Amino acid sequence: MENRTLGRNGLVSSAIGLGCMGMSDLYGPANEQDGIATIHAALEAGITLLDTGDFYGMGHNEMLIRDALRSANGSNRANALISVKFGAMRDAGGNWVGMDNRPAAVKNFLAYTLRRLGADHIDIYRPARLDPNVPIEETVGAIAEEVKAGRVRHIGLSEVGAETLRRAHAVHPIADLQIEYSLISRGIEKDILPTCRELGIGITAYGVLSRGLISGHWDPSRQLAANDFRSTNPRFSGDNLKHNLSLIDVLRTVAAGKQATPAQVAIAWVLAQGKDIVPLVGARRPERLAESLGALKLTLTAQDLTRIEEAIPSGAAAGDRYAAYAMAHLDSEK
Image (tube, rainbow, N blue to C red; front, side):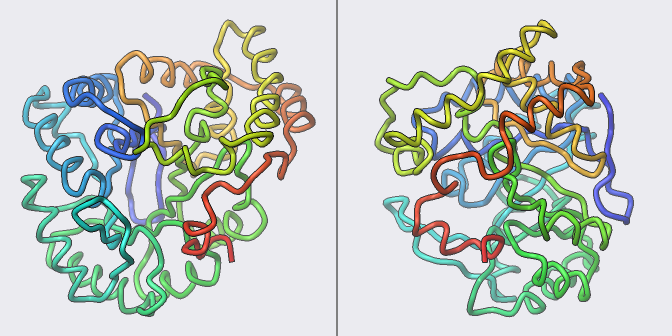
C-alpha cells in the first residue's frame, strides 16, 4: 500500500481511505457484519484511514468501527487512523435539525465520540459543515485545545471554501480538507485546491464514484429505498440520470484496454490528480473494496488522462451534487 502525507505536520495515510458512512446510514439497508468484514479487509490490505461522522447512524457507525477494531488483527488495528466529523444534529426520526459548532459543543461531541469508539484520542477531528452562527476561528480554537490535551491529533475541515480555509489555518494548522472530488464533481479545482496547496493542506476526497453513479454498476431502473438519500439527489433523477450515465462510456473504453473496471479508472483518475489527495472509497462489502483497491495497480498515461478530460470536461454533469436544501449549507459552493 502506497502512503501519502496530509498536511505539513507529519500525518501519513494510506493512499486510499475507507469511508464508513454507508455501513450505517443514508444508502438504504446495510448489513453490520458486512461492514465489519469490510473494515477488516481494508486493514489487512494496508488501508489505515477510516472515515466516519458521529451522526452516521446517530452513533452507530462509530460503535461499528469500535467493534471492528476490537476484533481486528492487533498490528492492523494499531495502524488505524480515525477521522471523525461532528456538528450535524438529528432528531429521533433521523431528520437533520441544524449545525452546532460552538466551542462547548465541540467538547461535548468529542467526549461522546471517544466513549463510543472506546478510544483515548481521535486522529483527525473536523466540523462536518460550517456553522453560520459560529466563527470558524472559535471552532478551530476549541479543537486546538483538545489537541493540546492529547484527545485530538490533527484538525481537519469539510466542505469549506478558500476564505474559510485561510481563516482556520491562521488559528491552527489544518491537516486536510474533506470535500467531494471526482470526474464529475470538480468545483475545487478553481480556488479551493490551489489554496490547499498554497497552505500545505491535504485533500481527502469523498464521492470519488459519485455515490455509485460513475462506478459502472448503476442500473438506471434501480428503485431506491426511502432512506437512501440518492432518491432526492438531482444527479440521480430523470434526464439528469440518463445524461450522467452516458458520461462513463469513456471510462468503460479505457478500462477495457487495461483489463480494469470503470470504477477503478475513476478512482485512478483522482489518485492521479496529486500526491496530496487521498480518495475515500465508500465500500460496504469486501468485494466492492477489493475492486476499488485495484485502482492502485492502474497507471493512467497522459494520453488516457487527455482522453478522459475531453469526454468528461469539468462541469459535464447534469444536476447539482446535493438537493437544494443541502447545497445551501456548503460553504465550498459559495
